[in-house]
Structures are given as C-alpha cells and as structure tokens.
Amino acid sequence: MRRVSVVALNTFREAVRDRVLYNLVFFALLMMAAAVAVGQISIGIEQTVIVSLGLSAISVIGLLISVFIGVALVSKEMDKRTLYALLAKPVRRWEFLLGKFGGLVLTLAVNTAAMALGLLLVMFYVKHSLERGDAAVLVAVYFILLKLALVVALALLFSCFTTPLLAILFTVGLYMVGLYVQELRNLPVEVMSPAMAAFTRWLSYLLPNFENFNVMAMAAHGRAIPGALILQNTLYVVIYCTIVLTAAAAVFSRRNLK
Amino acid sequence: MPGPVIEIENLTKEYPFGFLHLKKKTSLEGLNMQVERGEVFGFIGPNGAGKSTTIKLLMRLIFPTAGDARILGRPISDVEMHRDIGYLPEQPYFYDYLTAAEMLDYFARFHDLTAADRKERVKRTLKKVGLETARKIQLRKYSKGMLQRVGLAQAILHDPKVVILDEPMSGLDPVGRREVRDIILELKEDGKTVMFSTHILSDAEMLCDRVGVIVGGKLRGVGAPGTLVDMKTQGMEILFELRGASNAPLLSKATRAGDCYRLQVAEEELYATIEQLRGAGARILSVSQVKATLEEFFMNLVEADRAQASAVDVSEK
Image (tube, rainbow over all chains, first blue to last red; front, side, top):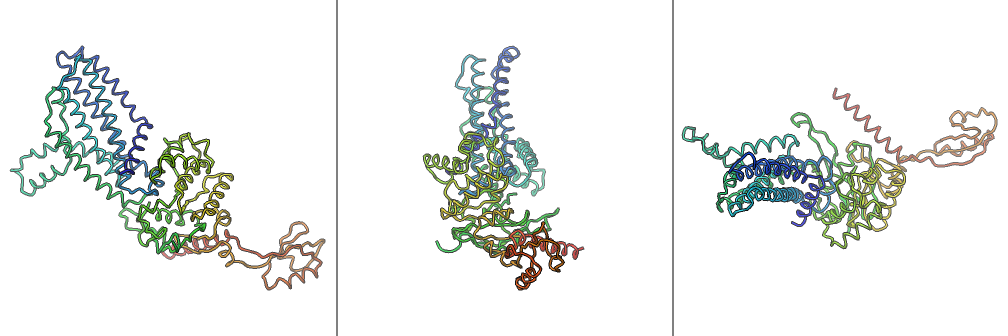
C-alpha cells in the first residue's frame, strides 16, 4: 500500500498545482452572495435556502471535478506518456490505478471539507448560531463525498478502455441513470412478463444508485439522518467501488500503451 | 549470477488494425537475442524497425503476441525485477508541475530508499547529468535536451544493474550527446549492463561492445561492430601522386583531386596494380584496406528490406 500512497499523494499534489482547488474561490463568492441575498428575499426559510444552495454547489462542483479529472487521471498519463517511466519502476498497474483514485478522492475530500466549512460559516452568519440539528449538513456533505468517490471510480473504469470524450459521456450518462434507479425499482413488475421483471430487478441492482445519497431535504430542515443509512451508504460505496476498481484494474493490466 | 542479463526468445508483436481489427501488422517478428553481463549493447535500426517495440515489450508497457523474455534471470512479468532496471523512454515527458528534484524524489520513493538516501542520490544524480543548477525549476520550463537528461537521471537514480535507454541521444546537442556517451561509458566501468537503441550509427560504433541490427521487425545481424562490418570488408584503396599527363589505363578508374589519385582495387590485384602505377611514374602515398562502415552495412539491409517489401507489394497487386 506504500506505493499506492506515493502515487496518491503525487496525484493530490498535481491537483493542487494545477489549481483545481481554485474552485473554492467561486464557492466562497457564491456563498457570500447567497448570505447577503437570503436575508433580503427569504423570511424564515434562510436555513433551507442556504443549505440547499450550499449542498447543491458542493455537489455540482464536486461532480465536475470527479468526471473531468477522473477521466483524465489515466488517459492524460497515457497521452503524455508520463506513465512509461513510472511503470518501469517496481509498481504494479493496479497500484498505480488505486493511487490515482485515492489521490483524487483525497483532493475531493479536502475540497469538500473546505466548502462544508464555508457553508457552516454562512449558516452561522445567517442564523447567528449553530444547533445540533445542523450536524445533518455534515452528514449530507459526507454523502456527497461518497457519491463523488463512486463517480471517480466509474470515470476511471471507462477511461481505461475508451477515449476521454466517450468516458465522460458514459460517466455522466450512468450518473443520470443512477439518479432514477429508485424509479426503476418502483416499476409495476406485476404487469410485466417474468423475464422482463427479472431483468428490471437485476438492472436496478446492477446500476449505481445515486438517489440514496440525496438527503438535501432532511439536512435543509435540520432533521436527523439515521445512522443505518450512513452505514448502508458507506458500505454500498466501499463494495461498489471495489468491484468497479477491480474491473478497471483487470482492463488496465492488459492494456497496451501507445 | 551466470548467463546473459537479457534473454529474448521468439518475441513477436502484432498490432491489429482495420475497422474490425481483422488485419494485423507485424511490428516485431520472432526476435531472439541476448545481452551479456557488463556489455554495452546497441540496438540499431531505422525508424519503425521495431527497436522501441522491443524495449516497450521488455518493460511490459505493451504485451507480446508470442515469445517471452527474461532480465537478470527473471521473467519480465515480475514487477520486483524493476528494482534492478533503469529505463529511459523515447522522447521522455514527465510531470511538468514537478521540479527535477521533486520528480526524482518521487521515483526514488518506489525503491524503498530512506529520506536521507533519496536526498543524497537526487543531488548526486542531478550533478551527474548536469542539472544541478536547474534542480528547482519546474519541468514545464525545461528544454527537450534538459528533459532527456532528467530522463536519464531517473533511469540511473537507483543504481540499477541493467540500464535500458530508448534513443538516449535524441534531441541532444553535440555537448549533450558527448555527456550521455560519457555516462554510458561510466555505467560500463561500474559493471552495469547497458542496452540502448539508436539510429545514430556513429554512437553505436563508438560505444558498443556489440550491436543488434533490426530492420522491418526482424533481427538482421548481431555482433561487435567490427565483426559485422568485416563481413562486408572488400578491396584495397591506393592513394598515389602522378604529376603531368599520363594515359595509363588505370587512371580512368581512379578519382582525381589535383595531382592525387584514389584508386580502389580487389585485394588480389593490389601488387600488380602497384607495379603498373610505378611503371607509369606514380608515387604511392598510401595503401589501405577498404572497410565497409556500419552505415553501409546498415543501408544495405534497409535497401534489401525495402526491395523485398515492394516486391511483396507488387505480387499482392
């Protein structure tokens, strides 16, 4: 795992030096503008507006980084051939892949944590106090990070066997589908043929379920998020990421570099 | 450990192409070759001959269609073997957001070196490749020649037993080439085995104990540069001076520069020719063996390969 951490820390350093964290400036400006505006246009629902806006911004910014940088993690190294010298060192391809994944997740964790801190500061500015129920915001941020880790794993998998453009399309497409997996599970299977019902059920379990991570409404209203859901989502991401990264490693381990 | 350091057996690489990948282009065909311990081995051939393909196969950057290879007695699939190997890719490109010192430190971390050891080696290696003063400059500001040097630095940083360099002279000015040649010779003195690819034949002649000539994906000859060339050694060259006009028939075959003539004859005709020239009043300045250069040997192979390829083309049509 030491080699994985060496690659991960370098990936984090790359993100920092490539000014990926500059998005925090945009987030800070957005939150400051929101803090000023919310006091004037929303009476009594300041928290709901601020939390919804803040969590949405954290999610969208994180998704943009996950998809675009996630796809570039491997493809850029192959295009620029920076990978050649590295793979000639005593490092396995799966270790490289896992390190790149870990590095971007670390970047996202730092980025998301900074934005969460910003959101809490704005909440404090608007409400002049923070309550215990506001901890739900932190759980919501944690869920966003879990979701982003899953998106990075998918982006990494697609970038291992297709072009960057297609990998972006596949990742975004799968994310969009994953938002509606619950709808797939709610389809009236009793009116379907048995084969179709089985197919629908299997598909709904096979596709990543991103809807599970959306607790924005609960956080905005300060409602506590059940511990079971936290555990379930954590395990779901760990298992799903393990499967996706194993597949990515299997593809990448046999890939001929240019 | 006795035996060759690099053993290549029947190594073949085919690339599929076409819409359904049904056609195949053979980039390397049944390569059998060995590199002995402590020697400098030059892998020479024109562009696209299969030199880089062979090296990439050895480094497991691409995978063979058939055949296998071993380095230091271990299969090339053994990742731990890379602890003893240094590799410089062709036209190297590194993380441009890092400085040279940071990049070397990053690569050194994969070799389980302590922080103090890493620091000392990075400093020593940068000095060796002449980048000591540029150690804190980001690689994005480096010239092509500087990148080549930093590439060489990362290849030798961990004191490997085997150093494989893909076109190490590429992009270097004469000073840089000289420095790389010196580094290769130093590695040899230190007992390292060096294999490098090049299409600059003078470098191969100057540095290599043995060379392998590859053309069209096939190995066409392996041996000491002198041995390979000796196979093609033919004739003798006589340099003579002849003042004034003469109608000696031999002069029609000679090339003239002022009063000096240069005449090439077969070895068995040498003495008879000298007698004739003396009889015509010529003063013999020198007699030397005509040796085909490595370049001529190389060009003959390339031309033969091209002729064969066009013959196949015509027959296919």
